[in-house]
Length: 63
Image (cartoon, rainbow, N blue to C red; front, side, top):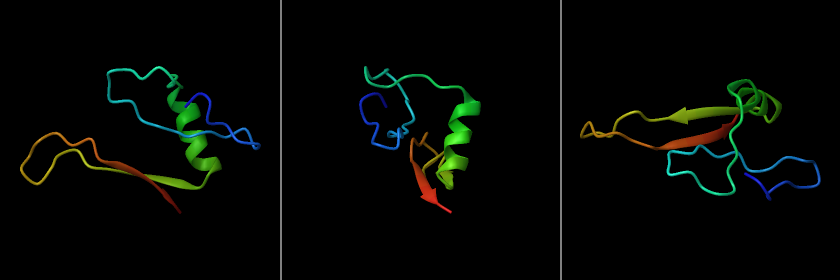
């Protein structure tokens, strides 16, 4: 997310479900997954809610 970089050069990593937010920039899947490896994160997501509706829930968890 543009404008969130700290002294270490890392910023907030967000998932865009649309419509596009102005400060978000597209990154390749390679860069996305490399960020997770560098920060020792795991990606948790939910495809559907308990009542079978589409879910946008996700979380970045420290490994």
